[in-house]
Length: 122
Image (cartoon, rainbow, N blue to C red; front, top):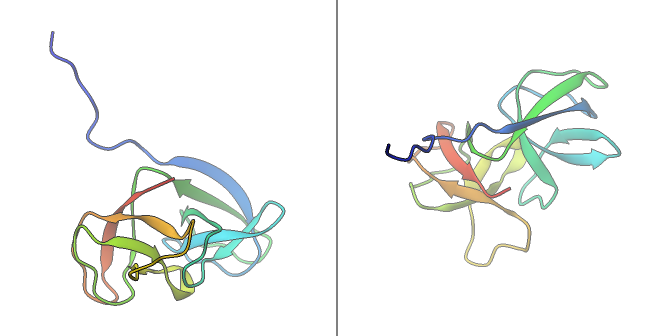
């Protein structure tokens, strides 16, 4: 019998509290003890992508790992390393990204504002 491996490994889910208003699909970062908010530019504290909209103090499910998708901030080409961008989006990493800021590698190409698939690093 041949070996079988899944094409995509599902992201791991965790439920946290929203410290700010969150829109499903935004990349979120740790903002305090058990809380997350939309990630800012080149955040080293990102944890994953919000699965749902959440108001302040609401629970929000966060998917991490695996292949996720988020809004592109600027043009991104498949194969680019990406980092978080303002308002929970993702952007092409610069030439020397700071430690811990690499979100992953783009699997698809996207124009500014379009969804891009990203293989998350953690």
